[in-house]
Image 1 (tube, rainbow, N blue to C red):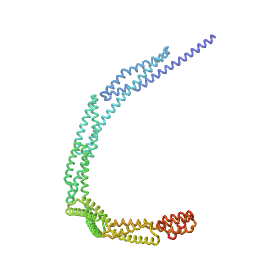
Image 2 (cartoon, one colour):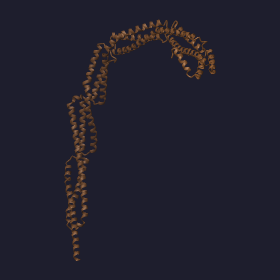
Image 3 (cartoon, rainbow, N blue to C red):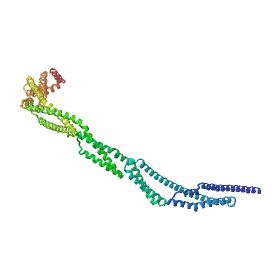
Image 4 (cartoon, rainbow, N blue to C red):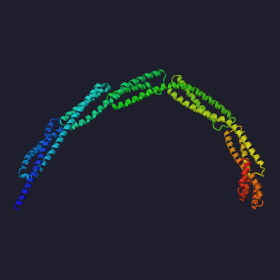
Length: 567
């Protein structure tokens, strides 16, 4: 029993010793890790970075910021690192003493101290990097501005021919920019950042404006120096030559306009030398447009001359031909007016056409006279004669249409007389056909229509026998007679068919003399026949016969139409 207790105590002791050993090893590991981490922080070499930053050209806020970084490192971070380095060996020694059991709290405090040191060092490192970047950017910006000024000088020196007289004022502006840049540099070195920044902002804007001028001026100067002078001289000489060749122009005082453009050119060059670029840009546009306009004015006359002279020859014959045609048409109308009533103002139309031709011919004579006197503006002559040519073409179309219309009068009269003869024959033929029917009499409405058609034919004859025939009225009468005759033929066919079929049906009804219904119908039909109501008479007998003997109506009707040749 005692032995077992001793064994238990030994086991407990062994377990405790093992646990104590493990705890000790963990504490040592943690302390070693802290020492390793601290050595890595030393690798940042913040103190060397601060020394390097002190060599930078820093002024104003940047310089104050570096001083603050140095102060925080010297007074806060560096003492904290030294204190940390003192605590770690002491804490490592405590792992071998009875203080091992309470060492975890001190390790946690040391870990917190290291975290604070790490954060402070990283913050200082970022601030130092920012200062270095600021200094680099500032230096780079200064170098770029200096390089830009060197480029400006080089461009003005090497390509001065592209700038003309504006080079003088451009160099003065560049000198002024460099003076402002020197002032900016001085204020920066003295630490007056607010004033220097204000100058820098203005300077950057002026630099861009100056660069834009260097880019823009050659484009503005080139036409002023190389294009417009030659064009104006060419215009002047060309105008003088054309005037000697008796050309005239739609524009007045072209020589004066050319002189005014030369004066404007000189003024524009002065404005360019004074760097009034917006004004110069508009002036260049105006000069170009006005020069092109004068070229076009003179070229227009050169192009128009040959065509105008050719057209004048054409119009001479064309006008005379149109006048001759109109005279002939007028004579023909006068002749026709003796026999016909002209209802469409034909003679008035010919007089109007004659006035138009006379006006055109007068214009032709005026233009021909101007050409002969060497006073003509050929483009205007061309425009007028083209218009007159178009008008003459339309006049001839009107003459042709009018001639065709009056030429038809005699043809239409002959055709109308032929139709009158045809209608007279037709009405007589209808009269004979009706007489040959040997009817007891004719219905009043038929007789009225027959005599009405006869009157219309007589009216047509009267129209054609007038001293002055009105062919419009004749044409209307022809249409009326044609329609009325067609209707009369239809009415005559109905009359003849009704009378003939009635007689056939009455003869056929005699076969049914023993049928009272047919006897009554036959009697009624005969009464209607005797009263000249032939259609009603046919219907009366035919209806009853069809009832008594279905199919009889169609059989008798078909037989009749075959006989008369209308099946």
